Image (cartoon, one colour):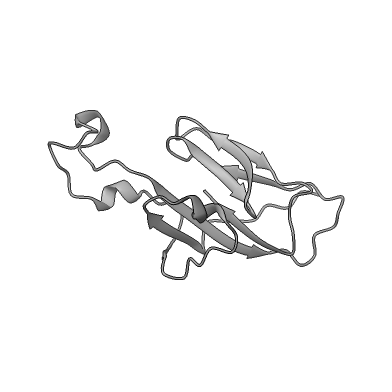
Length: 127
């Protein structure tokens, strides 16, 4: 039996970078809550001098992190679990509970990540 769940709510977002952001113990309480899909680049004022140029919409480039905390109470050991993304832009590295579980190069194409055997009762997904 196949079960599909919407995973778009309850994400936290921070515009910036830090090696500690993939750590499940990192304190992200000051991060902003967002609903996916989310495009942080449109929050910037267009700037004709932005390095992205016209092809990138004249927006400021950078790195943004997303984190989601979630619990699985009734997961059976033999169950297969996949996380399906309809699109993430540019060089996304995915971490589950601090472990690198995937990478997606260029954006907006769909892909999935197999979480089978990697989930705990309490989890943190960081992208």
